[in-house]
Image (cartoon, rainbow, N blue to C red; front, side, top):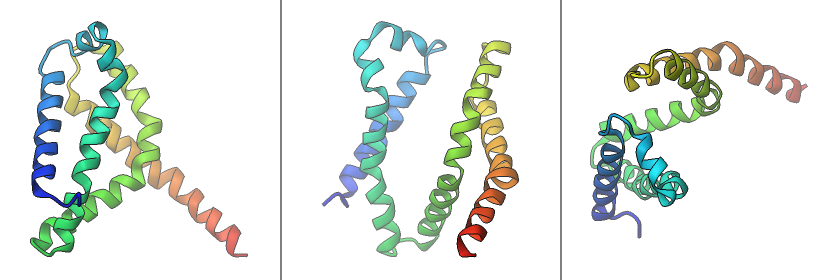
Length: 139
């Protein structure tokens, strides 16, 4: 029932509009300082809107409407999901460094350094330990 193009596009429009509204201000923190409701519901709003969009992504690829989009989305979801723990570990470091040393930081630069570091952490530390874990279990 969630495979509804209207729900998908309404959620996408809502997410883009919400994130644009929050990030269009030079000081997005002012929204959070002045609104208790936004402090409480910010992550819920984003999660619910993305959650409403996910069935549309998967059913789009299953229906075979566009194989390239389906394969691309599968590749993105699969690889980003492998990096989530590494992203979780490194993002506070870069947020702290960029915010303290360059208060007018570039968000694209933050995402770039965070993803590059997460990829390095995943391949240099996490993946070898996962292989070691799997090797120990099989013996």
